[in-house]
Image (cartoon, helix red, strand yellow):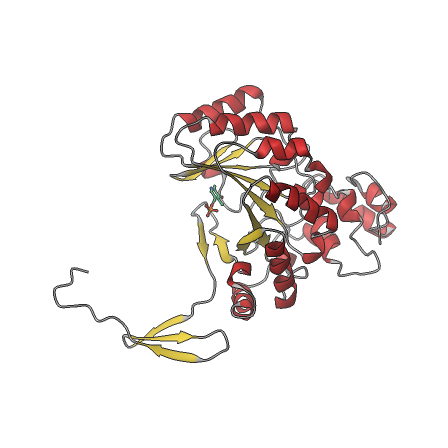
Length: 356
Ligand SMILES: *Cc1c(COP(=O)(O)O)cnc(C)c1O
């Protein structure tokens, strides 16, 4: 396996030293560096097989020349965060939920990230005053029921700072749930220390959403980190991005989702790839995503099946785009079963006095 290097690779020189690129790849990677941040943790470097040109871990984290291709439909802000940002660090798109982005830093920079223009060491973190203003915004709005810590990766904050933020949010009476989105348990499991776990536990339930895209990411160390979180009573869910050449086959997804469920993590969303700049080589068609969801239905436990969603470009929200099993023809229902059969189902006939 590739990396013997024990620090995070951030430059083409680091990637070369770690043995995960060839010298002739350096120039293209250096040209991309101005636009998109790079970081590959030792844990992820160790998983890369440099002899495999289609390595699913390298494809997710090691920059490639394909990223220089910007498709016409791609945008810097693919899901419309900006139109819903009333102040720095807050995205408020749904009445009952807000995103709070306390940091712009991540342990790794995923090459397909929908916020790839906003994250990275060059991005500004919130100052103490800006963070206080963001928390005031939440405190002043009684409709906000859920606060989602995102970013950047909140687990890149020190346990002291993260614990302080969670403690303040837990102190807001109308905040019923806190959600923390993170790639740290997979990308840098050693950061999930006892102090970090303690920082996450609060009187208000804290759901931890693990970002994980390939079964290889569930290493012994990652599984141990997930166990520490689960044993502290934190409910765990997972988000996966559907990625061409990484996880766009039913076997890989089945292994991933089963591995997550066995690690106490309930798959929540499978995201269709967003229109982030320089990511067309990662996107499948929606029809391919639907075919994969259809292939999994009936084959794996329902606990292993996330909802396949698309975040509508422009800030219009996330909606399910999975396959439809119910077809209505001439007022009659036909339902597909998981094995390709079709079945008539009697529709309820509205009674004459029905108001709908
Ligand atoms: C994804 C997202 C949420 C959370 O959506 P859920 O469907 O509740 O998981 C909330 N706000 C914004 C701005 C989002 O992008």
